[in-house]
Image 1 (cartoon, rainbow, N blue to C red):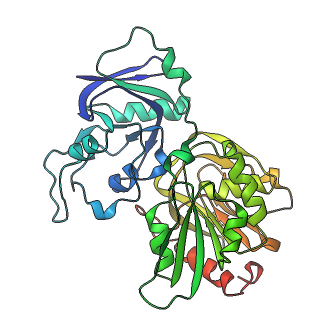
Image 2: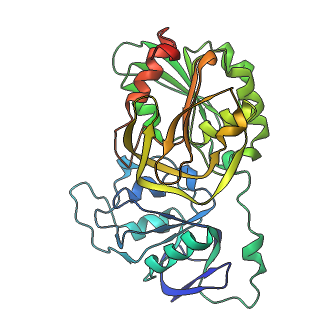
Image 3: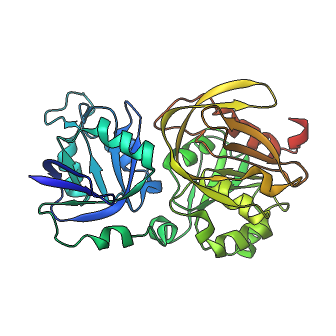
Amino acid sequence: MAYLLLNNGAVFKGERIGAAGDSVGELVFTTGMTGYLETLTDPSYAGQIIVQTFPLIGNYGVIEEDFEGEPAAAGYVVREICGEPSNFRSGYALDEFLKRKNIPGICGVDTRELTRILRDEGVMNAAICDVLPSETSFIGKYRVENAVGRVSGKKAETYLPEGEVKYSVTLIDYGAKKNIVRSLLRRGCKVTVVPYDTPAEAILERDPDGIMLSNGPGDPAENVYCIEQIKKLIGRKPVFGICLGHQLAALAMGGRTVKLKFGHRGVNQPVKELGTDRTYITSQNHGYAVVTESLGDTARLSFVNMNDGSCEGLEYKDKDCFTVQFHPEACAGPNDTAFLFDRFISMMGGKKLAEG
């Protein structure tokens, strides 16, 4: 027996899965029908309890080759967990993974009702516990803090493509997913991944052909030092930002961000590219958005979310910098926008953004 206790007082009873012990986190939902492994190993979920809206999770087991990073989630909530997976690549069951990674979970919960609460009232804190506590103020006091520092790598690492090295890219790791590196390697880039707190001067000393700002967790405005370093980088080298990197770049350029009611998490978010009037289906995981108007004439809106009209992409034409809120590297999700990596390659090759 286990309980999921929401900050609004709602209680859901279910069965314990995963690691033992109580847990508190920000409760969020994700709508992907597949990709639970990539979700659980996405560092952007640091400090959050993940609710899977798809009713059956774990049916293809755990495939370690598909991990996107080191798990940082505070908890996991599913309607039904599969105890006997069926997939030729599976190594072991999902419940075992949760135990190994110390992620408490609960199953047997009405995730449909739970998701409706979060959509109506917005994301909120919650606790997974074996016994309902008599005092619950600790739930409301919880905050996701210093999330980037917790998930970023601690030292620089360099990865080489199989063939000729065409370009060198420095990827600033705010909680980077592995497929960002793989996407660059496939395009002939040598990729050096550096910790989130690497000074701009040290990055420029490496003289990379381009700089990537990765995805990551938490409130973007909290990362004051990172924002100051990005200010020194934009305009010096071609820059491509994804998710948190998109938000940090906007803050560095004088914009502001706002927390969304329930965020965008899943693999089916429709995004329109304004320059072509074409709509793409994208993978997303974020709870904040850039306020486009706050940037004035500094940036041009390039992508917009077709569900709520929020900012999904920006171009800083005179700076050789563009950023997107969604995940062109996917994993999990559609590969519709993988061409953005090719656009970045073109920038490093001397083709200006305005010409693209």
